[in-house]
Length: 328
Image (cartoon, rainbow, N blue to C red; front, top):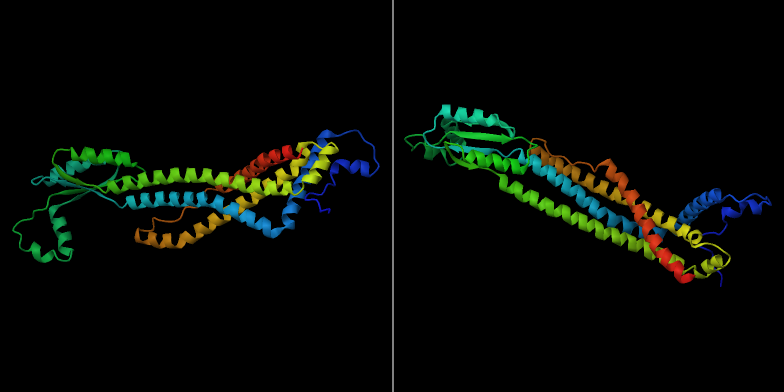
């Protein structure tokens, strides 16, 4: 029983002979023409079975979109942590008995440090006023004979300062003469950076595993295609066709699978980005509008389809070489 060939064998290599024209061999031109024919023939083959092609491309796209989405989430989580960290003030409580001149001198010294954005001196009277505005404290404050609150320095670190630099700043302030206590929200920043480091490592491992999955999907698809055309491939090789000649359409099929799945994966990631934009914007309103979703960089969006096409070519190359050795 004869079947329709997967890739039509009307090669442009025989175009001159079919027109009865005798010409000298043109190896470079023939090689280029066969590449163009193979690319278009493989694309037509994929389009002739839209359901199967769509399923294969969708599976590959999901595998590619997962690490891309995690990369998007980690990047925005890092930015969110930085934005929230800007609202964290380091409070330096001076020892009882330290006056305003000592607080001003200490604030001046801190402002000279490169890590510090601003320093605000809060007097005991200002601290008492803030406590009086808080529910439950106003009645208790009237029973006090004197103001027990110390001078407080509210230190704001610069936004681009690393967590290690902030830790050194806190350590130095704790060692300053006249300082009783330093309250810092740096512990949560360290935990966040540690979790982000683990997340980045997970993304790398996941990307590697899913890249292997893409190779296997393309390889299995090409293996089935070649296995269904074993007799035709055998005839071609008997009449002198090289393995590279026979393999070329299948390599382009792998490239098309990878390219289409890469474009679809980018589309999935963009949808996730759009879905996160509104809730993150609402959260940003609570923090003075400092939060918004960062889009994936353009170089990454362009690199995903290209990388997927390379993976598709590699999967098709490995499997087709193995299958053709068996068919030879």
